[in-house]
Image (cartoon, rainbow, N blue to C red; front, side, top):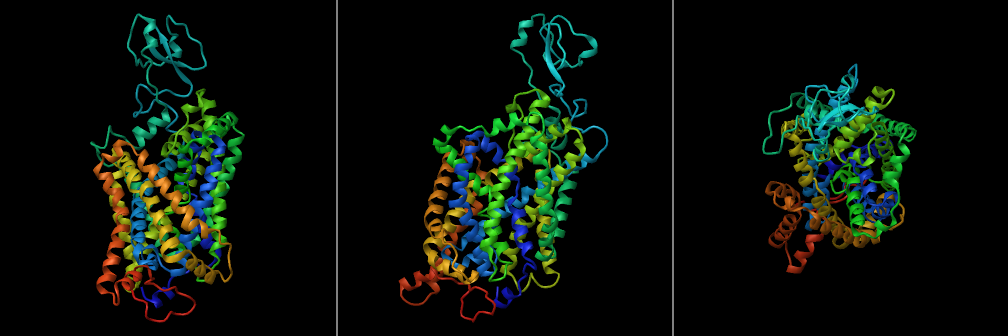
Amino acid sequence: MSDQAAMDRERWSWRFESIGTNIGFVACFQNLWRFPYLCYANGGFLFLIPYLLCSMFLAIPLMFLETALGQYTSSGPIRAWKICPLFQGIGVATTVVAWWRNIYYNVILAWTLYYLYSSCLGGEFPWTRCNNIWNTATCLESSSKWVCVNGTYIIGNKWETYPTEAPRAPSWNSRDVAGSSDNPDKCAYNYPSTTNPAQEFWQFNVLRQTDGIHYVGGIVWYLALNLFLAWTLIYFGLWMGVKLSGKIAYVTVPYIHLVLAAFFIRGVTLPGAYDGLRFFLYPNIYLLGRTQVWIAAGTEVFYSFSIGLGAFTALGSFNKFHYNFYRDSMIVAFLNVITSIYSVIIVSSFVGFVAFAEDIPISGAVDAGPGLFFEVFPRAFAAMPSSRVSAIFFFLVVLKIGLNSQLVMVGAFITSVLDLFPTSLRIGYYKGLFVLGVCFVNFLIGLSMVTQGGIYVFTLISHYGDSTVPIVWICFFESIAIGWFYGVRRFSRDIAEMLRWQQIEWYIICWPVTVPILALFVWISNIVTWSLFSFSNPLGICMTLSSMVWIPAGGVYSIYYHMIKGEGPTMTRLKMVIQPTIAPVRDEVQPDGVEMM
């Protein structure tokens, strides 16, 4: 990309477009469905101690680094990392991971659209009863229970007491799941498995789930239609560039936080909320002494802050050279932590309410991952007054969270590629065609995840392509590249030039010391704790390596390039490996003479 092309780059037209897009991006699904469960499993609210420390000394410095790099070079991830040619593969690696996430994230939007549509229909929610065609014999409504009569389990009203000899006809469901027996003691050994209507609606109606990835089955047409609609929304949000996508934040970001605030207030006033809060947040100080808790906190900040994906570099590239991104980064980081904290309160309150309404242990209502959105919350709405309004607003929030994340992630991928071909793809209608092509190809690939076995493909990609292993690998080398090779003092001067003031240089210690040490610790820990199944899946390992391999490959290529084409003594040519091959784009066009590899 030439200097003039960089000067002609799109810019945010107003400060809120930049900071609003960043805030919307970090308010991702992981804050809602991962963080609350981690608090429950790792010491309650005391988990905030390792989480905040890892945020301060690991995640926030990396977020700041990525944003500064994008603003200084006015480039997306691939081109921006030419600032240190030895590590230019970092940009490609982040783009590959972003691509993996783009593919499966929109499937979540397809599921959300289906639930939003189901919430708008009249009558009862379809996940309330067990009398639908997709329900099985083990489905048990919240008002029912298993009762053993003469060795046979049948379904009765939870709030009634039944004799053990014979059922009263009006109170019994006709389904028999255990078979007849004249031995009542057999009930102690043949207690039937139980599913709930929301769980079966999710598995057997929405997903139409098969037994495993070995049988993918056919495409679920309504999910495919929703996936197409989701990619259509992404296309129209991106085809006009940041001038449009930035303005979308005007609506989506305030809406998300206002509705979450409303759910916060509603949640803590629900019956059973206190029990849920106590279950999730009750402190266990002894767990802080376990290494696994600190590993969980270190792992979580990578997801919570969405670092290592090149998104902050792409967003920073649309800032003006002297824009105060330091202020924005601190605001975004603070709001992200606050969002994570009150998401715990929202989730724990609603989980406690589900347990109260269904008269079950709270542990029976706990879930992490997509099941929290599509099983637990629907169960809560089914038991709430004014439930339809709550359900519609909730799934609209989930939809807007996903759209905000996808507009940034897909935009980061597109920005990276456009920077490689600025004189062709950025001209006229070619950019629109390229954006359309990216969305359409991703839609076609995503169809594999809206088949009957699509949930297994979804899990495969999220577990390998977008896992902690490649993301932490990338972040480790980001800190090494800037902290030890480009030079932390040198980069600090670059930042001071952009901000026009000498900022607090707390990151001088973080980039070369705390970030690589903590990142390496988290990476090794995740490798060690990977299950044997993870290592025995060759396709999954290839997905993981598809991004990781670019960093060593880029380093080898850079050394080879300078050793073969460079001039002067060997040491001089080797030193060129860490000399920038890209110039910053200031207010004026930079002079010629910067070599582009």
